[in-house]
Image (cartoon, rainbow, N blue to C red; front, side, top):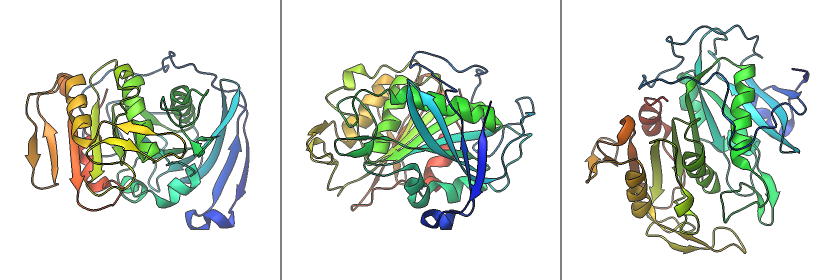
Length: 318
């Protein structure tokens, strides 16, 4: 793989420390139907760091910290920020989390604002912060009726996973997606259309959409941990039409109906049970050991709580 790298520390992301800027051209023109080489089947694992069950890696990874990566997908140049945790061990396979930004943001801005790195750094988790392409309402993702047309972001997510696996030592059975607002929509969308790659997702402040919920046909039961706020002014907790995206009216199922829909798709038990310790409700008995969880918070906060999400999400593997 041909790459060029330059150390720099741009002022706009100085709080992130040095950034390794790298580029690679036409590496992974992966289509939505392609599969990842080297992916293995597995069962439930612990929610901690690297997996000792997989063979050791022999990759020469970049230093821990942040590096800019580029690749070509479907004839378009795409990019993401790769983050290796401080205790990253290039000989030990680590979980991978893709963290998707909201509308009008970037991977760098998501890296700065996301609550996940502080928690996942301690768990030895590798993270990637993809950059959405620009649409009529700003940078975002193609999740069906919203928000960037004529681009296959599922293929992009698959390509990011494949490229990160060529750079860092990754456990192919423990790959996850998280995101807030339209980034949460992308997490839902990957659960629908890339469950063969992602062991679980954790969307925040976004529900399934009436416009394309019928197309959500995951290839296997997938763990979904949703965070929703009762007072969210842009994505109504009860569902209905939203003005989240200017010029693109979206009709949301609502938090409870989305919770129930994922339970149906994952063939879960009939009634959810509350977990008082974390304020979440969980459907029991889902097929394949999957979990469907809804965590509801009062007020308008639109972020999830990694300290609640990761013990659930990280305990599931393909």
